[in-house]
Length: 176
Image: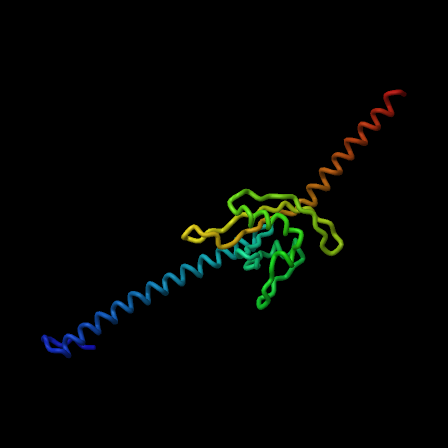
């Protein structure tokens, strides 16, 4: 409203109203900037999660899946439904034992090699579980990360059998 000179109630009301509008505009601009920054960070976060080859699953304190990257979906042959609550214990029962250990001792280091079968294909995964803290240092959930070790385990097994074959061949040649 236009500034009115004077000390009467209408002039004072006009100045206070204008001051309030300026404060609202500053707060609105701050909120818009914060939302823009949050959106930029969200896009970066999603890009990073999407490009990582390790599986990453975020769960709450009860084990409800909140986040799953594309690599996790591919490795586990699992698709997260938007409207359906999905729990890690039901979706990937092979992770249950280590997840229960993490629940019992959230501040410990939890890592284990897990064997699972998806689509009749056996896989070896290295699973790690770490806690997520809120700003007030309360545990608000867990992050499960895992790598597919199937090719590595197969390569190690083939190398071991190759070594056994060399030794057997050497033992057969020795008496000759």
